[in-house]
Structure formats: structure tokens, C-alpha cells
Length: 356
Image (cartoon, rainbow, N blue to C red):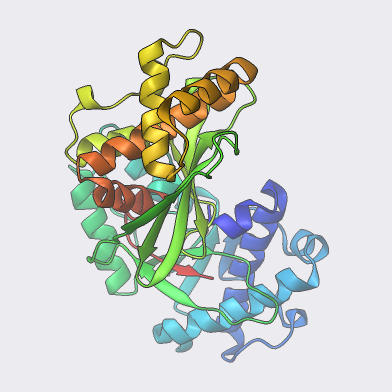
């Protein structure tokens, strides 16, 4: 699910995606750019199959959504000129056809390292030539992904990820998983000079000339290791979340021995030892540039732990992970892994085009 849409709520998401499919079908039907949503009628949407009615979509979305949908529909037909000639395509949001695409991937999900459908392919709508018939029972996920890639290249089947546009902006597109992997270069950390600053820690990175951050923190009010995860911030892939287990698997995949990592369930939460506090203070000092002495930082850490064990757990996991990855000279590899995962661009993800 596209980040900008998912934040609007499940039903608004469904309405927006369905209306996008209806708008594309209408753009195909009338043979020219859309200028107003009134052009979308029951007559013009015969080539769209959605799980929300046109009436519900029109009644449930505001003017900004409508404008975003019109702009995106017009841009899709610029990017895919084959759709301009004749009524060749059908546009899908939900339903049996979309289910069949994902059911084939789900059959091979185990061992892929991906936790959900959107990490394999985050398409919100699919467009397919009317003559297209999905082939199934592929022997491996690699084979299936190649099949999805080939049909994308031939403009037979196209997965489209959507994001609500800025009212004053235009629709921009980018194809993901077309062969060249996404990379992200580590540029720094942000955890605050003051140890008592929030439980968040940020890994800063640069990808394709755009700056971004990966927020690492506990997403619960309780000190529960399983609630620690990451989230991409910035214009690169805002809102993409990564579970803690995925992050640590990325660290291992980057070449760091498991014995050198402190996994979330290994963090001393209730009764840290003196060596635990010293280790934490030393890592914090090196990463933050704090000028306090180690003994003073140990005292601060003990006070913080006593006051808020959730803060302690969250901060300890993040600091230990970043410190270890830098020490092992694998931080760039981890940044790329997390960025790829959050962007649905891992080695096991499939090709799609994103509009934002």
C-alpha cells in the first residue's frame, strides 16, 4: 500500500484507489486527458473492476483527492502511450484478478525475507491488456518475478503504486525493481547531545541525491522488544516501516556475525549490570559527540533507566546496532538494505511504477 494513501485511513484508501482505476478507464474511453471528474460516469468505467462503487468514491473523496486522481490518470497515459490507442486495457482495484497475482507470490513467500504483500509489490491498482492471462505455478519466486518483469516491459501487466499529490504539484513517476538496485549511503546519526532526549535514534542517508532518515525506536509505551522497529522519513520513501527482525536480519545479511549484535530480546531491560551501563555510555558518547565523562554518562544512564525502562530499551537497541555496524564497516550495506525493504525494492520484490 502506498504510504501517502495508507495514512488516510483504510476506507479512504479503498475509495481513492478505486476512483483512480475508474479515472484511468475513463481516460481510455474518451481518448483524451481528463479535465473534470464529471467525465467519469457509469458509461465510461466499463473497463474498470473495483471493490468500491463509483458513487461511493465520488461521495467519499474531497477536492484534493479528486485533483490528484485526475493528474495521475493523465500522467499514466503519458508514460504508457500504448494505452492511448483503442480500448486495450482493463484497470483493477481488488477482486479475483488482483488476488490471483498475489496468491501466486504468497505460495513462494516462505524464505523470501518479505513480511507482506506490499513488500513484494506495493501496487494499489493494476492495469492489464484485455488479452492477458496470468500464468501460475511458477517453480521459484525468481521465475515469477521475471515473468512479472517481462509483462511489465511488454506493457501487458503493470502494477501501479499511488500517492496523494500536492494540490499545486504535478504527477511524477518512477519505476522500481527494473534491474538497478536502490542504494543508500550512510551520512550520519542523530540522537541528540542530551542523553534524555527522546527514545528515537535516526540514521541519516543519501539516496540518488535525496536525503532521508531512518527512525529507530520502540513503537509501544511498554518495554516490549518486539515493538522496536524502523521507519523511513523524508521525501525518499516517507512512511515505509521495517520490523526489528527484518532490520537485524539485514545486519546479518550485510556480513556482521550474529554474536557481535545485541538483538532486541537480548537487551538487559530490568537489571542492567555495571558493564551494560558502561557499554551504553561509551557508545552514546562516541555517536553523539557528548563532552561529558564516561562516569557522568553512566550516572545519567542509570537515572534514565530507573525513570523509564521503555526509553532505555529503545535507546539501547538503536545505539548498539548503529555503533556495531559502523565499527564493522557495514553501515552503508545496512542503510541500503533497510531503504530497499521500506521501498519494496529488495532482491525478491517485483517491478512496479510509483506515482507521487
